[in-house]
Length: 504
Ligand code: ME8
Image 1 (cartoon, rainbow, N blue to C red):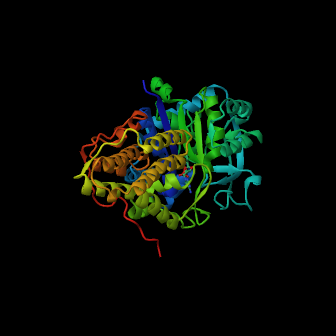
Image 2: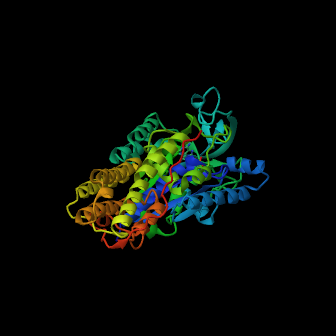
Image 3: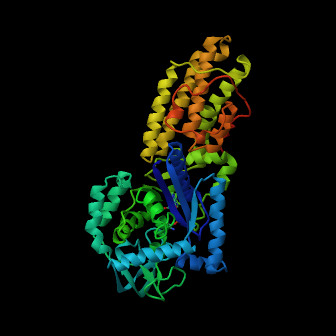
């Protein structure tokens, strides 16, 4: 049976509409899912929305809606944007669904039954947008360190998860699983938090009602984070379908931004241990996309929405940019100007130009029928290297490096054309060999690039006269040199990526 590959994004809050930060994580997860489908893995890709908690309750009030109305409306926006971006998620979970409410209750009940939940009083400085309490030390000039806004003093009786008991088990788990948090800098950050010492955390609230009821104490609802994190277990049948759950857990790859590292890399593994589960195999933590060096936020009015960029760059231009521009881990600054530059260089001048040159010469000198590649082409080795490097990079959660490896093959094919100048050659075996090699590169590139640009690659595949689609191919066999059979009609068509002029 094929390998299970389970990949998740955070579930996004429904008080905010999707912007390019959310899209960054989701497109990355989508590309990984698509890569693993090429490998023939049994892929399950989950995303969804986080719908409980004070923040949602208040934002619904401000909008004159019930929390569920607010959640319905915004959750639908997320679905629409993911559809527009060609996101291939297998499931979309909403934390207000009955399946999730039941799963949270089972999960938390098992932590309670295992003796890791106790009663206590909680008071502290609370940031509503974060849905989190802060110590005085964490505050920046009295404000929330993430949002820079005033915090509120809250005090309530609630249930505590005995996180303090998991300091050593977490350290042991990190030691036994060197790759559990990726990249290394983020792993060290998480280890730093654990080594500073862990205090018990409050997991329930009586002050609000918009949440999952605590099964052993009516009148309490779970604090939104201890409801939300469990979504990753719910979607694969936690508590209802043990066989399916065991197939995908703990071999899960969870992607998230650095803002929620503490919850995912400290609290969540501890919750799993407390519930008697293995923690997730891999937590991939990326940096933030900044705009003009600043965090995007509603209040700063500097959010950028996917549809606006898609209008200019197309869906695949959007996907490619965010996968290629930043490496996974550090923060990256988004700028429209550099998006235009990258689009022109990588897509118009490299990929687009290769197809256009090949189709033009085949049209003029080969009667529009693509010749077969040569068995001993100098490009065969480059193609093998690209496959090897791209595979290693996807495995290492490095989409940017994977695409760089893929584009090296495009670059080599363009250089091969420039060296041989087939547009000056007479029809015959020498010309056929050059064109066959270039067509074979295009075929292989379509497969390697399909996780990033599924629509474009399927389109180019069809223009090369190939049957089926690139995402139906299976690696590594399909990328072996010599797959382009020759004798197929090649269609020139319009430019793949019309050049853009830099903004004025
Ligand atoms: O935190 N750059 O939801 P959220 C890169 N519901 N990624 C960004 C980003 C940016 N500027 N802004 C947001 C929550 N993201 C909780 C999660 S999971 C059990 C619960 C991405 O709507 C990034 O993945 O605030 C970040 O972690 C996530 O959106 C936060 O989304």
